[in-house]
Length: 422
Image 1 (cartoon, one colour):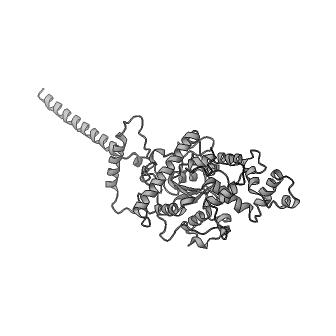
Image 2: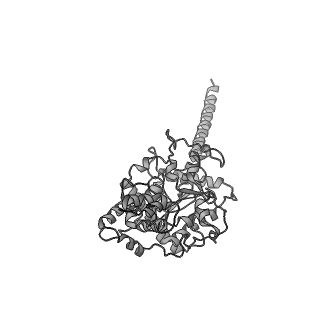
Image 3: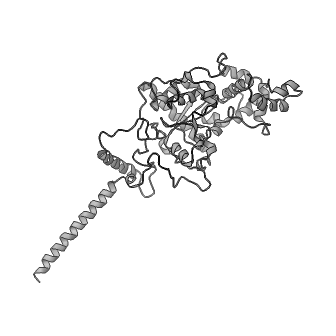
């Protein structure tokens, strides 16, 4: 009998120890970052997406719409919400958490991880672990703020246009066709969507210098740019490689006022000798839209006039297909499906291009080239020259051409080029 109180005290002490141990374990688990417990992708190892794949072979890419309004660029898609120590951290709170609870939890976890990281851990400048919260030393602070705000506004307008007119795009899966115009530069983790007649030749020169394939943009010839295989396209990678780069690289495109871009393409391809566009497009256009075309014209395809070219463009039964030099940007680059991090404009090329190079920490001596790639003795296509060409068209033809490029005008905030357009 005297032993019973002592036995009870020992049992109570043992229970207390177990309770304190369990409480300590729960506290440790709550502070532990779940990304440390998840298997990490190692460079060079196969990337095996689970949720991002579909049964028909399409590619589904994580969207980051909620984080892009504050332009705080990083090589991982210019998105500060991506944690370099693990997979993509979604910034939308789950249904089991109240608003505000998850950010605080993430902050606690990050502080704990920072304490556990070695102080002298080196991260390569072009690795996905680095973040670019400010431009390189080439940019002035006040000017950078202005360019940053311009980027925010451009992306906001693009998203609004997509939400209004391309509501179903965000639910579609990315296919190799959607990324066929995107060029890859792996060293600085850049994806560039080529928009012809919007500085694409010089941009490809810049990418080649960034990739270490040339020391200067001036050393790269036109044929090397367009007909060489130095730069890879995104659609040449396998499914996992496409997904990985879309979700971690900085994606950018440059656009141009649609009517100016169209006139620039016409001048380049039809007003100068061309061994492809004259026999392929010129002959078909002249045969269909020029009454009593001469045998010589039908044989060579030379001498297409701008109104004839526009007739071809607007014909739903056009005799030859579309071409990338006058196709819509919305079709070339799929901006409603691919969330571009940087949207530059041909009209502000020097500022936008050098700002972008600063953001990705390109070499200080690399600037966007200013030389004209082809027909260097000829004046660049300007608004004045564009109006001269469009004055050859009827009011209806101008309106229909504007309608043809309406999404590009809307998405990239270009004003109507003629007062009589509606």
